[in-house]
Image 1 (tube, rainbow, N blue to C red):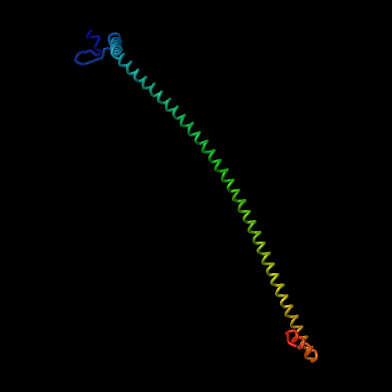
Image 2 (image 1 turned 90 degrees about the vertical axis):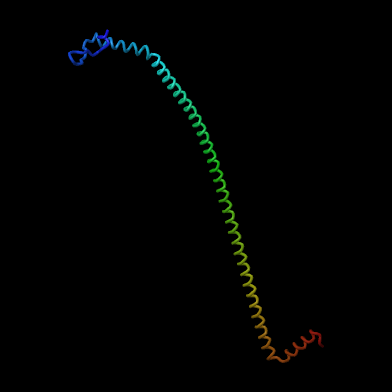
Length: 176
């Protein structure tokens, strides 16, 4: 049996390999495989079982993370949809406010135009009335001046007429 277990043999003064396959390799391999199977079966089974358990746990955790991510994605998509709806409402409200502000500005501009027209009309009417009053005053002044001049001319030529006028004026004032 010593020859079977040893793969190397001693020859004259040095070591060498036993090349007889039947004696060395097959038997040695069978023994090693037998020992490995006998002692390694439990260890290998336990290692493979542990590895299988780790893989199953990792798969379960990955599936849980996938479900969590899918739930988060659904929540975020719902939030995005709500944000889009809110943005649309804000946009519509802004358009309504802008339209109302535009209409208000147009109405104020129309009122200002009407006020300016009325002011201009009043200014024109007042200027016209002032001009008419001034023209009347001038006409009256000219008429009085002309009447006075004609009266002076008549009175200076006609002394009898002058006395008659003075007497009438005195009578009107309460004299004789």
